[in-house]
Each structure stands twice: as structure tokens, then as C-alpha cells.
Image (tube, rainbow, N blue to C red; front, side, top):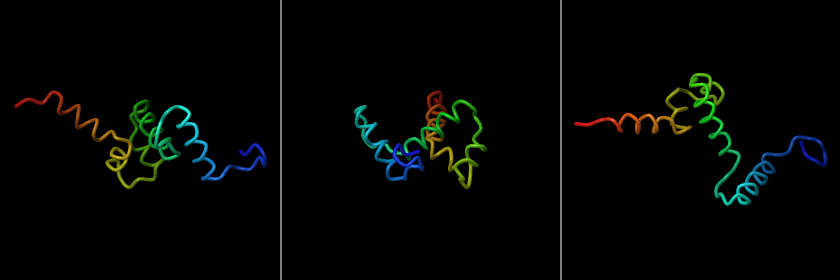
Length: 85
């Protein structure tokens, strides 16, 4: 809620707060979408429940969700680490 009105802050205000916090930490390109993706990544790492995460994000498939949070590439990289011909 807003400190002034006690109403929910706007999407734009949330972005401004995130951007300012990121800059204070020396980070670039931080926004509310960064939080959404980070939440998804850490939720998956903790729970390993991609189906629930798919529902939370309202994605059409588990594959879309894995790509969105970067898990698909992580899985490919791990599979290739031990692959020798």
C-alpha cells in the first residue's frame, strides 16, 4: 500500500521502486518482471513442481514455463556436461 493513501501502489510506481533499488545495488535492468522470473526459478528449485508453477504463471505448457525461468537450458547444460562420444 501507498504510504500516503494506503491504497495499492500502481504498476508504474512498483517499477520505479524496483528500478531505484536495483540502481542502489549497482544492478541494471531490474524490474517487477525480474521478480516474477526469479520467484519462478527459486520456487522450482525448492519444490520441483513445474505443473504448479505453470498454473501460477498461466502458461500453456510445462515447457514454456521451464524456458521462461531458465530451467530448460540448465537441464540441457547438465545433460551435456557428462556426454562424451
